[in-house]
Amino acid sequence: MHGIAQIDGEYAFASHREVPWHNLGVVVGQAMTIEEALILGGLNWEVKIDPLEVATYMGPVPIPNKYVTFRIDSKDGYVPLGIVGGNYEPIQNQTVIETLSLVADMTEGSIETIGALKNGSRIFATIKLDSGYKVGGVDAVDTYLLATSSHDGSVKFTILTTPVRVVCANTLRLATKKMKTNWTVKHTTKSDLLINEIKAERQLINDSIIEFNSIAERLADINITDYQAEKFAEHIFGLEGKETGAKRIAEERIAGLLDVYKNSTYQAGIVNNGWGLYNGYTEYLEYFRPLKNMDDTTKSKVIATSVFDTKTDAVRSDAIDYILTSL
Image 1 (cartoon, one colour):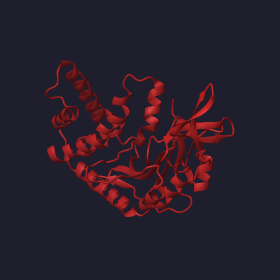
Image 2 (cartoon, rainbow, N blue to C red):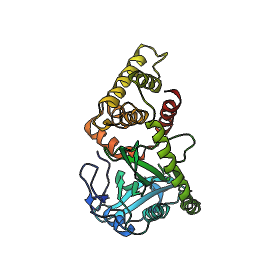
Image 3 (cartoon, one colour):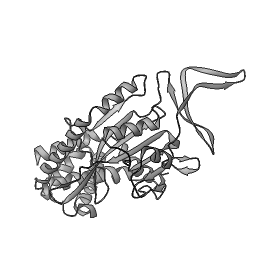
Image 4 (cartoon, rainbow, N blue to C red):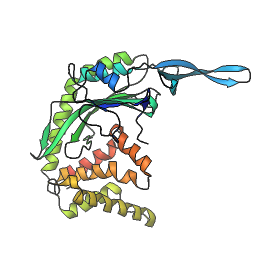
């Protein structure tokens, strides 16, 4: 499944220019105000909390220190979102969007996309920043701020920078050990204080964009031979020292990565340099390796939600370091 929630019978997704996820949602045609975004994106509702109870033959029995988060849907009525602990404090959809807008230093008419996943338990919104850039003078990259949060305790309220290649809409996130690209807030009683701290870190976001451009240019300046590309792939997938079965899997992944790097339509103009090699790896990592042996339903869900996944930041950082220091 695509994972986009249905709120009041409508898909909870709205976009300024286009609908990138399975042609679901609303194309608005202009950047949205906060109020417009919440309505069109199906997020104009509040999260509420009730004590969690279990049904017994003696009647409902409360579970100590456990609560259920929920929303009210005009079509489906009471819609549970998740089970949380006693310290959990909901961060409302409007707070998420307002914080994103303030951090981006935007005024009205700034929200590009907004939507909900997993029945409304996960929400997101993006704002496009005025910091478009061409790596090596040829490869256009736009920069967005993404805000995402959960109402089931699974994900912290997070704001992160997401550079996106214009040619293919792939999300890049140049993750390095020293480069701060995301800011998080736990759902606790102190969340309001932490959100105010995020609002004050606009300069750090600017710094991360400048650092992204610098690293991208350094990568583009590195010429890559076929031999070096193979060594990179072998390093990434740890070919050396593997036994027969694991070695065969690593060899398949190496071949897959090199095929994407050399032959993907979106690699035109950037093959044979470090920037192209990193983008080939990113494309393989996000859209090929994880999708192997998945059915179409699962593939759609992975693609639709891949932008939120920061779990690969460590391997991205290793890839960048290897290209910059070893090739």
